[in-house]
Image 1 (cartoon, helix red, strand yellow):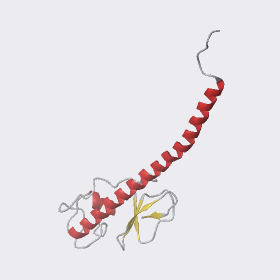
Image 2 (tube, one colour):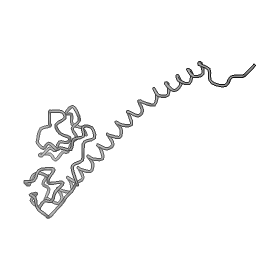
Image 3 (cartoon, rainbow, N blue to C red):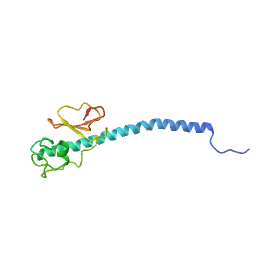
Image 4 (tube, rainbow, N blue to C red):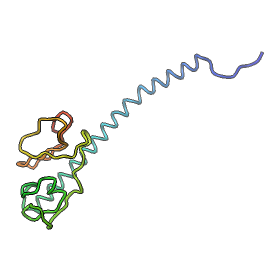
Length: 143
């Protein structure tokens, strides 16, 4: 009698079932890792911009970016004078406004009331309190 080499159908089915179970366990962990990476990036961006806002305030006699004639984005990414107008004394504080990792927008809405529309801005800067917040895809402010 000749001995056959190869796998039986049962052996192949067992391997396929085991691979399916492993895939069911591993795939959700990848989606969690993606969300965690976005959250980490968001926190890093918030910390960077908030620290540059504080530096701006120190150099501009406690005035907030955008109070001296230049917009918030122009005040942080360009050069300003002591009064906060476009000039050559201080800055730039940021190369560019970072993108919000949850909606891929780098636009900043300025005002005293929170934005209510989703997907129109990446960030919100409160011009009366100096608070800098991220806006997610459903217009909730974060962190």
